[in-house]
Image (cartoon, rainbow, N blue to C red):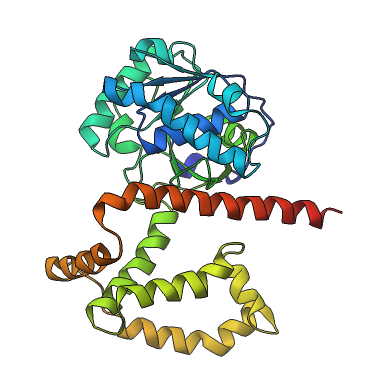
Length: 332
């Protein structure tokens, strides 16, 4: 089935689904471990597999550490031990996917690797299992075209880490069945994620294209010498980011003019068109990247990256705890 043949209403589920699992997580790096938390805290059995035995052996201890942090912020409804007990490492791919309702693939971002993995998943998984890739940019058509079960294959692109940032972008190939995306949307929603459907294949999907546009301009302003990296981060963290933590760009501009979006466009369209005409795209020049890396290294030595990542995750947990409390207060 091609995109043009799909019904228009693919941006939400048409039926409810109560997932029962098990869920198979293939690849146990940061994204894979976070996906395991997503499904296990929703009460589902999870099976893990990684071709690298060291990664597989370290996955559950790392997950337990993350669950302990989540418990401190009251972001899980069960004990860390109970959630971790639902997660089972599997030595073979076949054991991990044999009975899976959904397979969430998290292998390296290379077409050849994903093509080989999906061939195995299509061969080993049960016929009705959903086969999802966590790829950040590759379209499903690049690695599923030759599969007998290609209609059940799609991209489910998360934000790192999906256990804390709930967005997941669902993007099928031209041959992905409508029912596949409908089932996937309902399943991810049932485990607490915020799924959106990308209507038609596009590299980078929605999030990375939006992020890429902002990053391109930030890099360009930095390269041209208008600000250092720290000040540009401040503009985002203490400016745009505060609003964007709880509303999107369209709602932002809707509230920024008395007459809403139309009024905002009337007031500022010429300004933004002028800025666009002056924009200098960033070409990822090695000299600028080297300068930026040196500036960042002076602030955060590479040896401290993991510790800072844990700090970031705890800040996200605090924000989620605030949002959960705020939602509860609003309902009173």
